[in-house]
Amino acid sequence: MNMDKIIEILKSVRSDVDYANETSLVDGKILDSFDVVGIVSELSMEYGVTITIDDITPENFNSAEAIYNMVNRLLDEE
Image 1 (cartoon, rainbow, N blue to C red):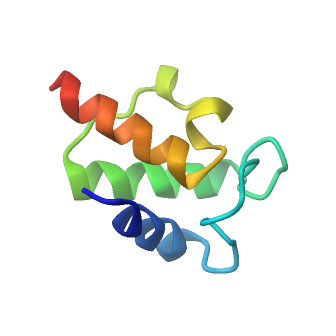
Image 2: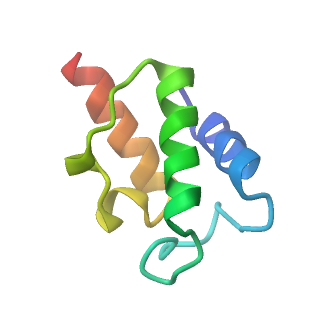
């Protein structure tokens, strides 16, 4: 897994966002709940991770780096 793949997945859900530089995707209301659900679905399919409701927090979804770190953590836990 690498950051480029995470950004590719994010762009498949919302292509109009600068994921490489944005750090308040949720807090800044750039992504809405439908976007987050789409991202969760794509990440689950791509990496086989289970993202629970407890994982869906602004801290985990405010940036591509935060999403990358969350997926890495979930992969390590499996």
